[in-house]
Image (cartoon, each protein chain N blue to C red):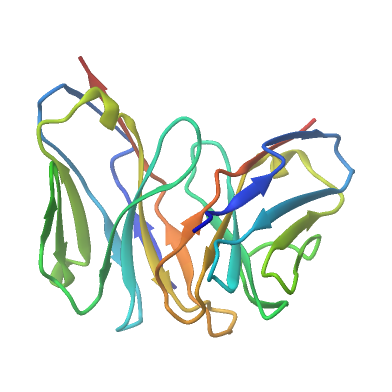
Length: 119
Length: 113
């Protein structure tokens, strides 16, 4: 069965530090998608990035970067020069077809990492 | 392009009661999924609706049920509420078969007392 592990429950850094959030996943499928979401205290899930299983190219978007390695089943997220506004819970998620059948994908989330950036 | 809207925002119910949560999908999306997020946990997949039928279900009992309407909006119904049903319920719309492109609503926070 699919599984997403975020081993870091909480991380606390000082503003301007770089921080990496780890994500390890398990899947039996060859076609899947990986996501990172940000959840501020208000509760909504804010989409950050999506990668498909055939594209291992790393990506950079401003202060955010992602390192996807199929060999280690990892999809890590780095924030460079962190800011107080980055404080939130971050979720890694995996999209696969449901075990119970059906043609539609479902998202499996990790338990999240609470990032606190202190001024 | 409208996003996903969920109602109500907050709700308090008594154990044993029934509750209905509502979700309108994003324009152009035909699939709606529901997720339960307990405090301190990641969202858990409840089920998914496509063409007004359930199309995939997570590990949730039958007292969790749903509907999808011709305009792709959806309802989540929970019968015989238990204290452990207290959670944030998130709705996500997507285009079927794509595996990506989920748009989430802001959620309904349900408290069962």
